[in-house]
Image (cartoon, rainbow over all chains, first blue to last red):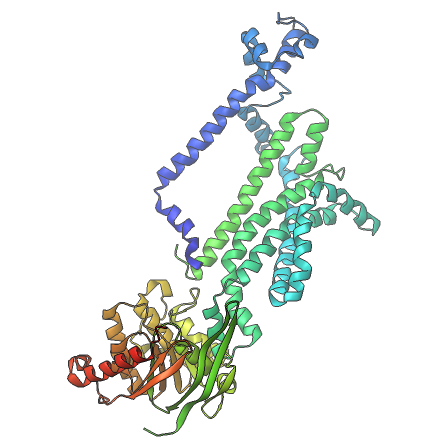
Length: 326
Length: 260
């Protein structure tokens, strides 16, 4: 069990150039498909815009174009396909446009000294990150404590585990507004707490399941050994179950932090929040600025990547100290 | 060698209830093991030799008869940490270094830190693993891991050593070497050893007493007092005396094996 972590170590055995090459190949394919998709996605908007500037379009009016497929439109108006790649409000922005928008709302803001401006994704990302952090902390605590209780007691397992599973079947978007309404009813002002609660709701489950598995991972022989020493329950827990569970815990934490981020973003959607990545997505939708949505989505993805990487590094450091091959 | 009894089993029975009906792992087993004895248990799979050992260790609860260890019940003996147990697989905790694996029982039993260090040093020297204290189990060969697990069982003051096929998974060359070392260790430490094995030469080479067991129901079919001298170089296995004992063990195994 312990050495299955080799997957990481083995991956490192592959030459860096080869790993980089395969990653870049996938990335390149995504970018190519994306660029190809921009043309059909934006053709209608591009033609509408061209029509306003007085260009000859076939068919000439938007109403007539409505029932014609994008493929036909593209075939009949080849010279306007390229317009779709430089629209101000595209249905599907190009990767370059998303990159520019990301830069405009992050790096450029920093250069201008407006890092914490309401238009800066760094500001919004920080708001979401805080909720993610508290949600992660709360969710992880609930998950670990729950797992310990479940492993210690058969009764708790039978009474708690079904609810934990059912909880994940309820869509969080349905639950989020209720959490916000209810927490304001009990006098909790601000969105920090309900957002953290929604975030923890998604985060606790993978931690709970992973920790139950981890705490139960010691073999019968490992348990018998402690019995021959007449070890106490606390000793058995601290010296065997806890260290045996750590690889499982970290794997769960990586899933948990990503879930916590999703939870925090979802928590920002129905709250009428004006700050946070979720709020940017919602506002972008309401004001018809897809670029803002895409930039916020990418900011969230980058944030998730960073968070998971941080935990992954912590895992590698700890497991190496615990003698796992690396 | 004193004639004090270390382990005494009387009419010991253990029946497992399974879906296919009861399985008599042990039935009316009686045996005395004297202090300082090296007793081997040999027999085919399912003869109850491991179950018998686990009863001595209070890891299984007999359903009939009684078993006394050092004059008290197996449970009390376990509570007073009367024995060290060596499992078939070394069973070292992979997240602990060799030194910290040996330290595990000492931590649990609450030895002072300085004494823990001294004992770890002593037993690792005893099993020829001095200098490997900071290695992790996976950095050691199977034979070395098993030696470390023996060191772990020797680290605290138990005068009984229960060994469940400790060398079963090792190749013959390593096994010969470890057998030789184990005999030296036994001579040095004066412990009472109960040793489960599948191998006739191993049983004859190591033991002062060989208990031949047979299955369905698990029972003792022969108890052989080994006439070989205490000092046993490895090539004693080529002598006639050795072959005679081995022959008797083989006869016992054949007689006890029911083919019905």
